[in-house]
Image 1 (cartoon, one colour):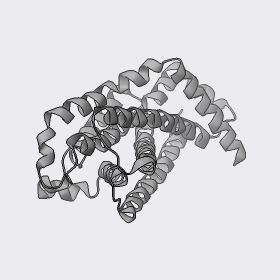
Image 2: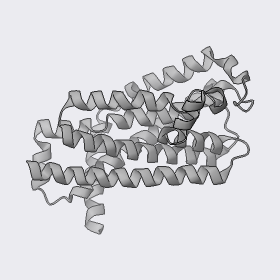
Image 3: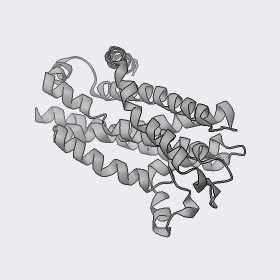
Length: 258
């Protein structure tokens, strides 16, 4: 077990060194979320007057949704790292190395978790400057980062599994786009549950993006419902474990096929 952790740590450092050489990537990947936050936050200010928004400003309501959408979109592209490794021959070198297969997957996911933690804190900070308020304070921010990482690990694992199966950029892009936008808009990321049609409210209850948004928004509020927060965190944890296990199985299937 300790050997797996050491190998996973070394592989995570490898990924983080590559990220440190390209800090521009983090900045570019935040352009779209920040446009959503700042543009939608201003365009739909009056929407917060509708029932279901809890009397908070719209940008306060929107910020947890944008954090979750950032995690979803960033993790949806996570499998590109495996495809790059396949194309450059890095994957073959990893397969003949003593590194455990689980450590390779964990290294990718740990790198994704670090990236999403940085991005979540930046979005929360920009929201604060733009007028969002977080009465839940530091505990609320910590919960927001936690559920962001869990959501990212879940969908990052799914993206990695798909990449190992399809081995094609075009296929991975198509599948990621097919999932990310519907999952975002079939949640309460940008609209209160009470203002959505009944069928969207039904779908949102089984939508992992909505679990993350609800947990973050609740934890950042003045009077959090911690039972609901813990329930949503538990659902995201189970999802992350199941999808990480499937990603490991996909890796073993890939190895047997080459």
